[in-house]
Image (cartoon, rainbow, N blue to C red; front, top):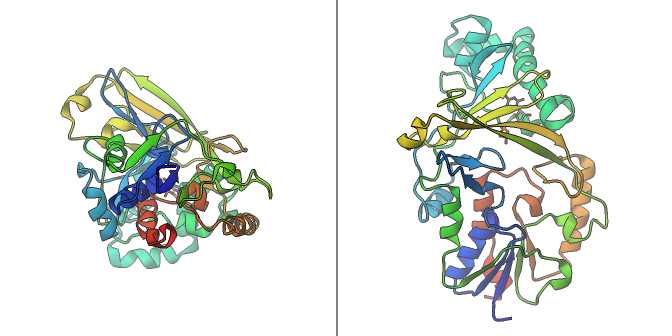
Length: 356
Ligand code: UDP
C-alpha cells in the first residue's frame, strides 16, 4: 500500500485526524462507508430555497476550548449564530435553559437573581419545573423515566440565575458561513490525503500501517460479545409554503403527549443569508426518538453499568491490535458534541502510533 496510514470513518474525529496526519507528512488514505464524508454533520442544500438542511438533526458548533476554536477557524468562518432553544409546554412558549426568563414566566413571578436559589429549593417549585420541562421530554428521548438515565445527560442543560437565554455556556459558537460540508471538504483538501467513499472497513482488512477507526466498535468485532445499545431517531422533513413556521431554529415540545421531542426549522441557522430568509418557503423537521436495533442509525449511546462492562470488553479486544486506534462518537461509544470529537482527535498522539 502506498499510504502511511488509514483513516476509516470520515466524521469530525476522522477528518481532523486525517488533516493532522497529512500535515505531519503522512500519506493518508480515508475510507468512508457512506456515499459522502462528514458523518452526522453532513448537510444537504434544498435546491429550491437554498436552505441548508441538517439531515441528521441540528448541529451547532460551540466550544470553550481555545485549541479547537483556533483549529477549526483555519478552515471555515462562522456566521456568529447564537443558539437559543424554546420550549412549548401546554400551549405556552418558554425560553430554555432553566433561568429567570423561564422560571418567572412559568410561575408568574418577578424573581431577582439573588432570590432564585431559595425559590427553587422549595420542592414544589423544582418538581413543577422538572415535570413540565424534563420528565416528558426525557421519557420520550430515552424511552424510560428520567430516574433511569445517567444524571449527567440532563445536566447538559444549563441552570442559571439570570436572564441569559443562550443555550450553551461556551464562549464561541456559530454555524459555518459556507455550510457544514465545506468544513469537511477543506479539512480533507490536502495533497497527502486520498478519499474513497462507499468504502466500509472490516477488521479482516486491517493493514499493517496505523489505522484510525471511528465506526461502531461492536460492529468491528462482529458483535461477538453482543450489541452496545443506542437510542435512534427518526426525522420527518416537511417543506411548507410559509416564510417562517416557528420563528426560531429549535422548538422543544416537552409534554409526553406530543410524539416528537422537537421541531427544527433550518433557515434560522443562517440569519445572515437574507435571500434565503426571505424565500416564501421553509423546511422543518420533526424529531422522533426511537428504539435502536443493529442496522439502525445509532445516535445516542445508552450508558448503563451493563453497556459500560460490554464496552470494556470490546476495548480490551481492540487493544490486541497495536496499530489500531479507535475513537470518535461511534468508536468511543460516547455522547460527543462536535467540539469534543475534534478535541479528542487533536489529542491523539499520532507519532506514537506512526512510529515517530
Ligand atoms: N432535556 C429535557 N428537556 C428539554 C431539553 C433537554 O428533558 O427541553 C433533557 C433530555 O434528557 C436530553 C438532555 O436534557 O436528552 C440533554 O439535552 P440536549 O439539548 O443537550 O440534547 P441534544 O441536543 O444533545 O439531543
